[in-house]
Image 1 (cartoon, rainbow, N blue to C red):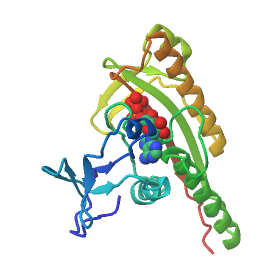
Image 2 (image 1 turned 45 degrees about the horizontal axis):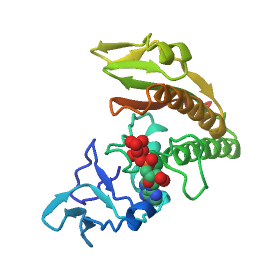
Image 3 (image 1 turned 45 degrees about the vertical axis):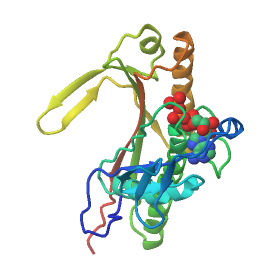
Amino acid sequence: MPDPTGTGEDENVQVAVRVRPLSADELTKGCKPVVHKSPDAPHISLRDHHQFTFDQVFPPHTHQSDVFTECVKPLVDGVVNGRNATVLAYGQTGSGKTYTMGTGYGQGTLENQGMLPRATRYLFDYIARAKNDALLQGIPEPEFRIEVSFIELYNNSFYDLFDASSVDKKKSKIKVVGDASRGVTVQGVVQFAVSSPSEIMALLDRGSLARVTESTNMNQFSSRSHAIFSLEVSHRRAVVPEV
Ligand SMILES: Nc1ncnc2c1ncn2[C@@H]1O[C@H](COP(=O)(O)OP(=O)(O)OP(=O)(O)O)[C@@H](O)[C@H]1O
């Protein structure tokens, strides 16, 4: 994410707060908002007593497109240039994680689409532009390979949401390996190569459905369950022959 404070510090970890609007049910019950954004600073105040500062604050009724442009688009720009990025949604149940991330089953309207569908569209538009630019310049097309995996962290173990037997029987085939050069990596995860945003969304639905089915068996989503959807982008730039 770019440096929003203008201090010149480009921090690796940035925290944005998004305040969701009160639901129709909450309004009917007479609930009142207790979280307010300061007009000219990334602060929120809680019941007008406590003030907290974040890198970004998005008040209720912020459009999904604005959250994407400010928080996620710069990360995708980094990914296509070889950097790693993670977008993590954290909050109590019903606070809007699924809505913001766009990781629920079924995607809703284009305007309401969350971060993941937007990131995949942006990624494939970038690839199409890069290939078109190469064509116009008469140079070989760059190659991109995108692989998708979807795992669940539950009770300190990882389960593969693309592997039904792992999810059903809660048997993990995934190993977490620490390596001095690559850091911590997970091994034994099913990965699918994809070539369009719709394939990615179909895989998201497939894994989300496995998770929903499993949570129905457990009667509810557990707060100990965290879903991690990953896109691995490998990029080989075209070798331009010397003239
Ligand atoms: N910014 C928003 N604008 C409009 N509606 C929202 C917004 N954020 C959340 N909602 C609505 O609030 C409800 C709860 O949101 P959501 O399901 O995303 O919460 P959650 O944090 O994922 O909950 P859980 O942890 O229980 O899965 C949903 O009906 C969702 O559509």
